[in-house]
Each structure stands twice: as C-alpha cells, then as structure tokens.
Length: 425
Image 1 (cartoon, rainbow, N blue to C red):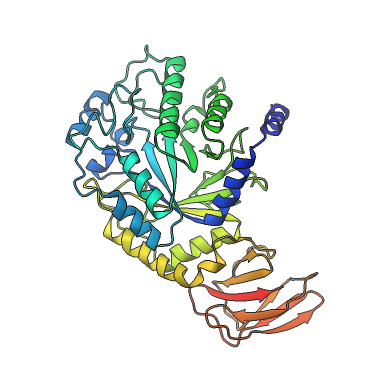
Image 2: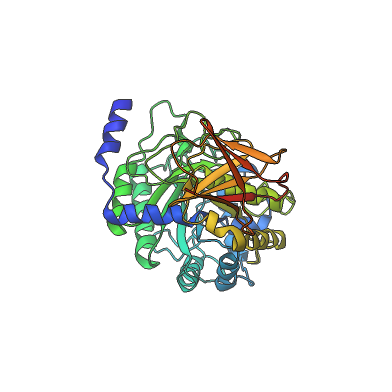
C-alpha cells in the first residue's frame, strides 16, 4: 500500500503555473480563514447541526431566515488588507451542505436561491479580493449532512436521514459539478481547501474518495490553483499544500497531526483559531492575545509555514469587534516587521524555545520571543556574518565568533513581543 502511494505521488507532476503559484503562496505568509454559513444564526459554531442532532429537514428551513444585512465584502477585504493579510480562505460549502454561492447543481440549497438575502457571497468576495489584491481560496467540504445521496460516515448519524438513498456516483458527480462552477464562474482561485475525508477514516473497507480524478479536474480547470486537504494524513497524489490543523508543522498538541511527516516538497500551512471556535460562537470570548497571535505568525514563518488565522463572522454579516481589533494589532506590527515575514522562508537555524529564524536572500532574521539573557548563541557555522543590527532601529549588535557559532551580544534582555536581529550573511 505504501509503495503504491509513493508511486502515485511520483506520477503527479505539477505544472509550471502550479509551481509558480506555490512559491507565491509561500511568499504571502498570512491568511484569514472565514467560517460563515447559516449555522452562524444559532451562534454555536459550524458543527451545531451535528452536535445538537438537528433533523436534516428542520435544519433545511434555516436559510429562510438568513439575511445578513450588514455584509459588505469590500469592508471585510479592506480590513484584511490593512491588517497585512495576503489571502483569505472562505467556506464555500461546509459540512451542513449549504452553499454560500449561486450553484445550479445543488437543487437550490444555496444562499442565492434559498435565502431572502439572494446575493452570491462568493461572487462579491471574489470581486473585492480582485480590487484589493487579495488572493481568494475556497474551502469545500467533502462530507455532507444534508444530501441524501452522501454515503453517511462517522458524523451526522442522528439527523434523521434515510440510509437507503446513499449513492456515491451521484454525490461525486454533484461535488465535481460544484467545483467546476467555483473554478469557472469566480475568476482566479488561489487554492481549493478540502475537509471531511476523515468522515470515513474508520470504515472497515477503505473508502475510495476518487481524489486523484477530482484533483486532475481542478488542475485542468485552473492549472495554477493549489490543492490542500485537511485529512490529517500524509500527502495524497495531486495535493500542493500540506495542512496542519491547530498546530505548527511537526507538532501534535491538538491531536490532529499524529504520524504526519512534514513535507519538504510542498508549501506548509498552519490553520488556527483566533478564539476557541471556527464558526461564530456567541459564548466564546476566549480570544488569543496580541502577543500570542503575533508569535504564532512568527513561529509559523520560522517553520517555513503560512498562518491561516480564523474568524467566524456573525449572522448579521459583521466581523466580531474583537477579531477586528486583533487584526489591526497584527497589521500595526506587520507594518514595521513585515519585511522579516513576507517573502521569507524558514531560516538556517532550527526553531528553538527562544524563537525562530526567517531568511530572504542574504538576510537572516533572528526572531527572539522568549529569552531571559542579554546574549544569544547561534550554532551558525560555514557562513560569514557581515553585519548584525536590531531590525527596528538599526542599532549595531556585537558579534563574537567561535568554532561552534556566534554569540549575539544584545546589551539587554529582550522584552519586545518579537525582538528581531537582522544578520547580513
């Protein structure tokens, strides 16, 4: 089985457009994840249908009351732009099966046909992203708690759905029809971000999602469109991004990355929540601090990964005030230190408890976030340090060399959220 998987991976040859898009994706470094759908009306997160065992026929009545009167795609995207965000990933369709775009193949179960709002959210976001130079990525759920032809997996088993209408061939055709719509009607899409194949991870007989054919369809429709899949496993053939949910690459603090090998061939992305929830949760006020979020971004960059930071918009179409405040704080910081993050790759010094390094050309940025001393030793050998300075004000940093590396004499114990020393190699 392992040999077959390796052979399949070897057979996928990304196009020149795809390779270029991968490099551009890595340069962007900071994205915003948007979990938004009719579930926001209940204020209990995007899994509320499953968690509360809401009958599928009753849940299907909810779109009739969905009218986000304050939704303004330009205001959203402009706020992201000012915060230093370079791309957004939007939930075009989540596990509840409701489409946030004007689909023609879903029987009318979408934001245009089933709500009094009657506006195509994805289309408006695509136009705003184009205007402000933000790349649009689209989340798409492989599982579905609404459609009766979806082969029921480990989730959504108490929703009153009949079990005699499951039809994989029909469901697979439907998914590919929607994917074709998304990659045909909404301009250039930076990536398709899939989720849900873990719904059949426990099947006695391995479930065949026919991913290779689906991925080939995507790469044919838009060769530069990247593919990521949040399956919590090693890469499948055709995937261009490796995703780590609630974790940095190589860690497994959230329990989703057990056994995953960190790829050194494709871009990496860490998706994290700003509070505790993905979809809007009215009782969740546990927002991470400015310091935590900035250091999360820096540590991701130092581990050669992007940070995709989540916001759950309210049902009225507004972004939560605390989320906007945190974004502004991150934008202010990036306004000073963005050069040390954007366009960089993980530095030649491995991540440590004290911090990480990022690198661009002959510049090595030493990000010091947790240090109790006024000096820092770096095991930097084989290269010559031409110059060392504090990034924010240009103050020279004394460098003492030895066989084992160099000692940065900082002159003080760093107290900044991220004390950056720039080394010219």
